[in-house]
Length: 335
Ligand SMILES: [Zn+2]
Image (tube, rainbow, N blue to C red; front, side, top):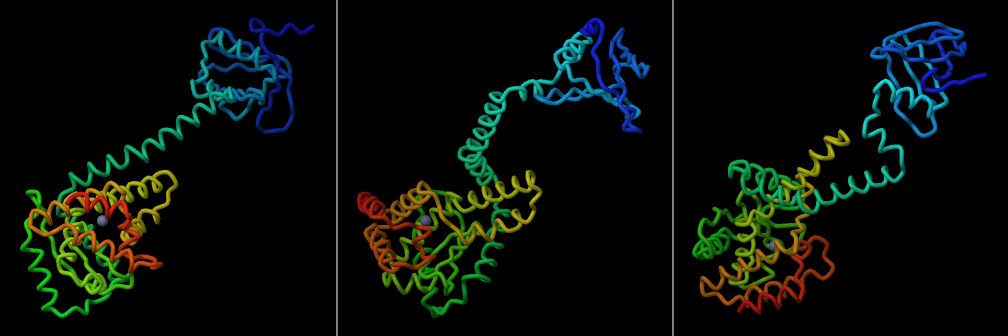
């Protein structure tokens, strides 16, 4: 009669690792040494053995250093035997025993990822953007302008005198806050319609189409003030850092380096700011206009015209700066 238990040992199937022959053996443990008896007799220090992790339906497996192994079906008896030797399954293994544990672990993981993405990443990006040396920021902007020039921008057709006139007008305005970033006004014709954007390099790109559409220099000033607001708050730098961080993350997790390399141009062409960023830039612009005695209504009018002009256009100023009625009302309320 078989009386296998923790004190007398557990039965199992032994394979020598060289032939497929099955040996029936009994495993016992005394003083830190495992003994097999039955078809095969052998002993080995416990420390030299590897015990498979506990899985719900699999037999436990004990591997010897020479490639031989023992399979035990009676997992309860085996666990008892192991417990007597002081062997402990790791916490991870124990948690994997229950589906509930798995679900909780999954939920926590998803939660951490979501919180990181929604809260930590923007905060970290903001912090990085604000601490990034200006020289690095300028370099990032340089790359972005090159990409834009290759893909959507062309040489300006505005007469040099007209460019200079607008440049001088904007330079004459006083920023609403101290430490305004240095900027450079860059004119370009565009395949993306009336548009303006502030690059981390300090370049404020303005398309001929925008100047021609507004037909009002004060409105042009309003748009430029809005862009200076983005620049002053480092909005685009933030977005670039954030996207690079996501790409760097995919690189680390999935080993996909291409995602990181393509991130910058993609962001450059998809400059959608958050609503908060837009409002910040609007507030900045309104403050700047008032500071210089210009009626913010010029800015409201700029958005009205842009709204009319965009009708169906794909990548107009509006896709990055939605001219909602709410927004126009907000600018007018600031008067
Ligand atoms: Zn904007």
